[in-house]
Length: 107
Image 1: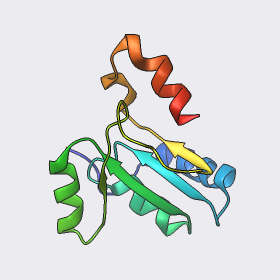
Image 2: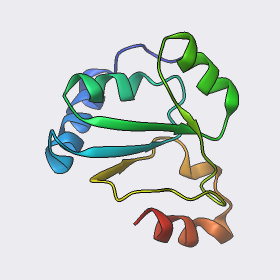
Image 3: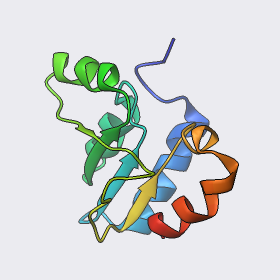
Image 4: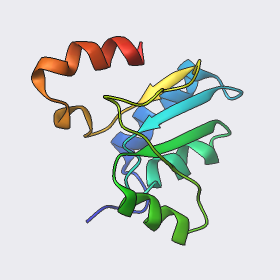
């Protein structure tokens, strides 16, 4: 169960991310899930590359008219450069022995 609109605390954090990226910035969202955080960010004027490792989440976004891309943090090219990266509740799925590698790739 995911809220369609981030709560006040989440909104404040996402607004800080936009302040870092700049309104002309591009954000890589890793693990977009249903895409509601990306919706909020796009509403603030930034471009978001929506990605997820789960095809079903991307299908949910597509059903809402949103485009997301299948992306595996461990093996796929992340593209870029980006002005910021958003990874909510996704890094916990990275095996511990690979977290340093993944964080270095994101950086």
